[in-house]
Image (cartoon, rainbow, N blue to C red):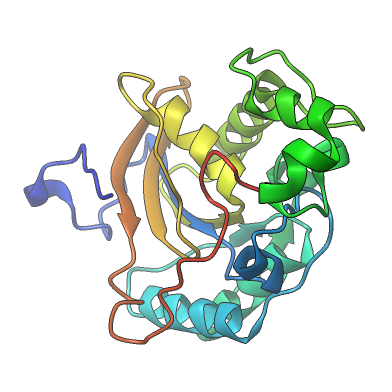
Amino acid sequence: MATSSVPESESDSSCVGSDYAEIIVLRHGETAWNADGRIQGHLDVELNDAGRQQAAVVGDRLSKEPKISVVYSSDLARAYETAQIIAARCGGIKVVTDVDLRERHLGDLQGLVFRDTAKLNPKAHQAFVSRETCQEIPGGGESRDQLHQRCASSVQRIGNKHKGERVVLVSHGGFIRTLYKQASPDGRSVEKVLNTSVNIIHVYDDGKWTIKSWGDVSHLNPTGYLQSGFGGDEKSG
């Protein structure tokens, strides 16, 4: 999926207005658990070889675009390694870790293969698929409302700090889907966020967010590293 709310004539990202930050939001590269359909949440899983290649390719792409001031990253290994690879490809820019950029905590579902959750932990599974946004997941898992609050406050904080700049933010599928819903004019959801897809939003200091572009994986198409790995959708973890 690709969307844009900025006219083509205004899409030159070298011209960032002084009243907003341009935030390039990326999902981390693929992990072995993504490929296996295993829920990660806050568990620390490193990239697999495909994920490292994805990070290198998107890093090469960003290195050819207008200047990036800083890379923000979840402190979880799959995001942090992705961020480090991107930063190195872009000339060694600084990487700042932020625990608020983590994936949704999925409680007792973490570590389970998604297709087995209903059988192995029906209570946690029902909490996860519930449409009640205040529903927490047993085992310390966050509700959708809690994830939304964390996403909104952390992205706004970063945006306020970097008005007039372009910054990269490396996070996770559930977090980024929440971000999309916040920025979307009609509050709609996006079905899936692919590994290292490029998603660009403008964050204004009055709390307004707009989507410049979404779901761009053109850097992956020629490489063979466009994976259909698990995660990045409503089963995300």
